Length: 123
Image 1 (cartoon, rainbow, N blue to C red):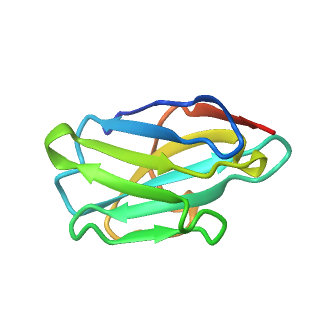
Image 2: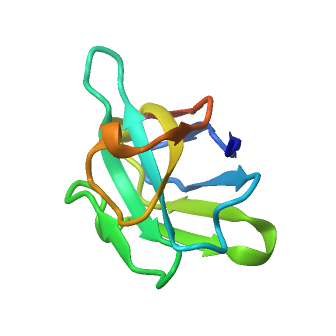
């Protein structure tokens, strides 16, 4: 059983930055996929970024590409999401997720989820 714990959410003004962390009980050093998803009020959960831990290959949603960076620290079993140039559309609960194998873009393919961390961006 993999346990995930997010941290780093909070409130920030538009144009600001936040870094989210996802501490995993295991998984990071193996060939698995770690992802960040978000869900805004009244909207469906959407993928933000994913990283394949075996190679470090990364994948981003179009809406965040160039602003967000996903990275991993194998020694700490932690995945990060650096979020720059935040705007009000980025306001959501952000979830860390993990799955065995390749980086599917579908949230339904991920077996393990954290509890979520709130990110609020004000104008």
